[in-house]
Image 1 (cartoon, rainbow, N blue to C red):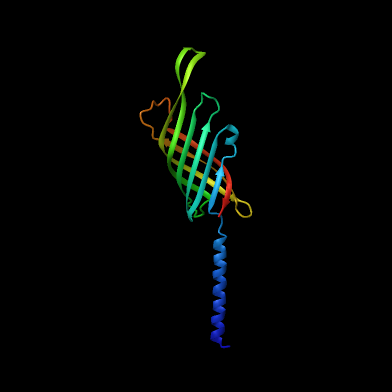
Image 2: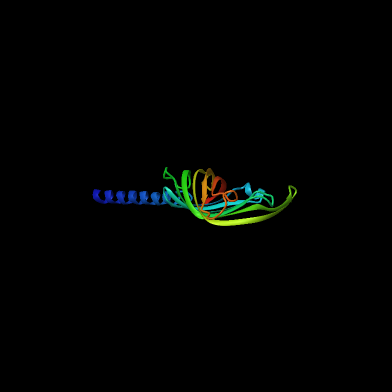
Length: 187
């Protein structure tokens, strides 16, 4: 066999090996989706959950929903559904530090005192409003385990409710947000 043929064969075998290993590395590049919830809120009668999908190396999109009830019939209740675009500055989408901006819809339900005969005898009415929302948040998310299938995230931010014609003492137009979720990461 000539030197040229051996060189071409070695090049072809080397090129094939590099291509196959590169494809295998790409196939094992980690999770591209996460489904997560706050594990503590259901104990309190509330819920917070999110589905996040990697779009590119530094960007993901998330859909989240939450319901917060502070327990008593006369306490405030908050519901929301958001779509968020999350930037990961270190180019490791779904893992590490992330900054998000979101648009959604949120509802607030508050109790208003109406007729009070005296301090112990009042009639209360629940008043609800729904409005578009804008939110910003910062978070840190870890992908844990041998296959990076466990996602844990913590973070916080703020949400603005675009309420119109509401008394400021009943409805909050600006709310802080907290995030603590545990979830499953998959391809």
